[in-house]
Length: 503
Ligand SMILES: *Cc1c(COP(=O)(O)O)cnc(C)c1O
Image 1 (cartoon, rainbow, N blue to C red):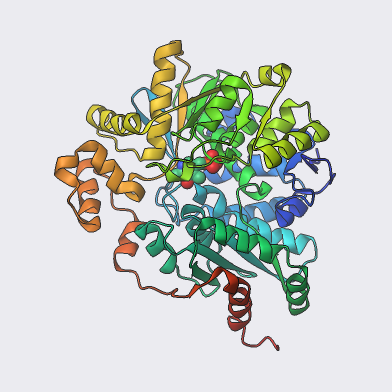
Image 2 (cartoon, rainbow, N blue to C red; image 1 turned 120 degrees about the vertical axis):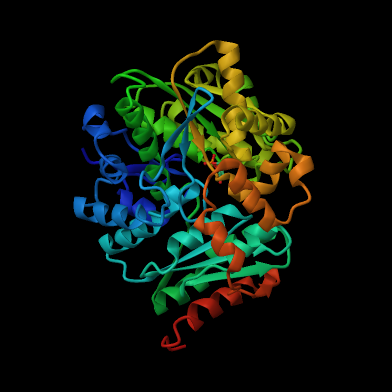
């Protein structure tokens, strides 16, 4: 079955997977969605005997139908290799009556590696398939995590280069260090004097600058983006939910056809949407438990049917979930409108103008498969401590948001369906918060380095390569510019890294 993609807002129809991967966002501002959901053809028993790469292959080929088997295998083999520090790629860890799906064994020790390690290959193959010989220039503004994961994914991938802008005083010292030490001849990291919004606005301006685009095209370059709405990021995320299901089957936790719950710590709604897509292609799902932090706009949406971003923004210990507009929710809205692009576009329009929208009672009913809740900061800290004391298992604050929500869900509903919890970051990535939760008196005064050793002592988990590298890495990127200088900085990076280009 061939799968083609439409924009959620109706402006574009019938694109191939590779075309959507190159475009990212549709021209009408909508997100690309499959015209229909494919169904898993391999049985779960059969899949339970396959390794991660093979399961990913079975999932990707359903959605990316214009890729040949050979092309998909090339992408998968280059993405899910020894970069991951666990041969299982994303192992399941049983603790507290839950299955923690550890999605943080890649290069930047957080779950975005799962998709960003394959996206560069999906993109370069897509370019070839569409007879594009330009070099792909990835342009991103980051508030921390995504930038680093994208840099690590694109570093030294032939046919690509990547330029990341970050706010000089708007990321954590560890995040900054991770970025400015990034290796790879095709990577460029630039600090701007301004905040994240300035960086994002600047990038959007560059993206929409037609003159610059034409100039680059003439010289053999084209922009693309690696953000979380790209089909090339969404589809690889579906794979690990299928994988988790088949591992529970292999361990005899469930029998074939028995449902599971997925609990997901949510920000932009990409990860949990992938779980929903897994359900659509045939994974038996009971509930999708959507866990928010104090920025609980999604909890309120599931409870009331009204999405309202007009509210205070809180900075929490789970920064990757500090989001008031969850872009990928648009794909779910499209489904619950009965795939009505006009209706979806008009909801998005009211979000744009008034910052809010309300769905109909009927649409709200279609959200039955979701359960939303949130965890406040004290509860997140308490959950890290409880899971540690009970199980000697150390979890990061994002994962703890999900754990807190799931524990309460279990208490309140009595639901005993086996539950997979998306564990989205290594505790090493947020060591300070984690150790503070476990024992502030003992750990608060320690240096970063001492804290890594403390985490090692209490968890028994090896210090990840990403952290060891960071402790002695050389700073490679030192440029700081004003927002007004961003465009020139882009030109400089692109042309200077290719001195042979004739200006
Ligand atoms: C990005 C991120 C999330 C949120 O995932 P979404 O797909 O945006 O919902 C959760 N945890 C961590 C560690 C992340 O980096």
